[in-house]
Amino acid sequence: MIFDEPKYPVIDSAPGFWKTVGNFSLRDYALVAATTGVSLPFGYVTGRSAKMAVPSMYMAGAIGALAGVMLSYQNSSGRLMGFVPNDREVEAGLAKER
Image (cartoon, rainbow, N blue to C red; front, top):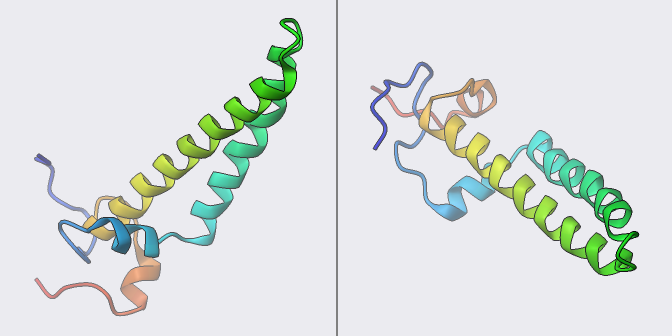
């Protein structure tokens, strides 16, 4: 349950999965790419000592990609629900009348 009042115009008070993913911005996709890109070399370096560099790199990349998707999903749903700035969505005419 969310007890805070939205500070910005509400587009959808309870957005579904596909609406939230469809609302991903370029910044959200960049966040997914950045978290994945940072995780891959981190996994490679940490796996070298155990001689498992490549499997460790793949696993860290998958975890980083999942983290990026989850952060982007949170950002997108926050914009749709009016808890974070959503100027782009409001300009597109998606906001509900109060």
